[in-house]
Length: 397
Image (cartoon, rainbow, N blue to C red; front, side):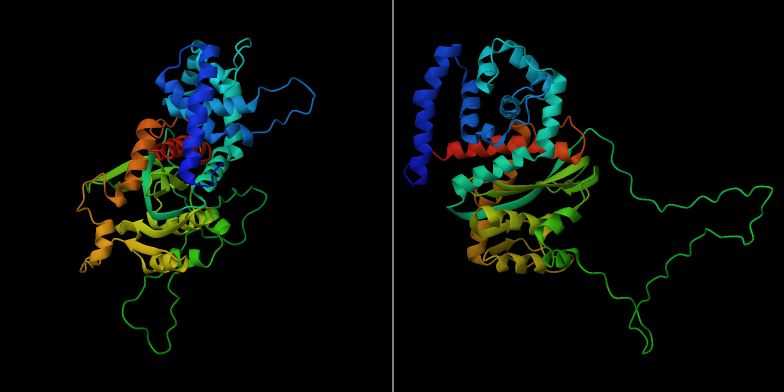
């Protein structure tokens, strides 16, 4: 294949259009535009190359996991809300059943089999690995101008985790044969209040707490990801219009290229501040693509994040948060890239908002029916995988 990226995209497009689709039409009949879209996504994603069978020849052979993985990608593309709805669609749609790989002469797997397969895919981070390979293959050698970083609310159908309470050890009741020698008090003395003003000459005060961003800069990526909270809880975030919204669930953090392709994603608790995901996301994105500018809103305003972005060889474009002070405006050249003087959909800054909106409206980001951060992340990553393939196909224009 030609090393030119546009020629490579057009070559793959022509193969699907003139070779694969006619063969499927002769096999299953007429294909609707939505089914053709599923075919394009599956051909670009090629998720079956990352699925391996674990059957060793003993017992009943399991259902082919690659067929089930294709079905979950099709579920995101078609916007189906539940696995039960996916199974019903496969039962009545022979074309979709054949596109995913299921033989027409055999019975479809049960809903329990689909659920077990999804658990395996979630535990093995299948969609995340496929997305990483897709980004490295198509954008790894390209120079990305801007990467927009933002977080979005993910509502979940589970109860928020209760905040940790100090455990009080229960004292066993004394038996008649023995009496306690010393009475033990379980009341805890409150911590002394912090004194105001300068300390005395002979007074020693505890050191100030270390900033989480400063601590992250001293850690490796694996340590940062391990420290991020992932439990379901309550969160509050300002929307694009400046109003505060509260929800129960999680928060998805996305790095989006200026071409609209999501580069990296992280899932955290809803209560976690957006800035704590900036450094891990930037390191993940730096391993996959090369970019010039990092675009972030005022929630990421921090000298630590600016220094970290420069350490990666990037130019930080972070909106200043005055914090009851005087707002520092962008330089004229930087304001052209960030400021909203252009129309809403032409501004580079809105790439993250467009990706979040498309993920929720078109690829299942609003219909979270699973519980637990691992399964929620797997569900969202199947949608991000479909969104990435859709945006890559749009680059042919």
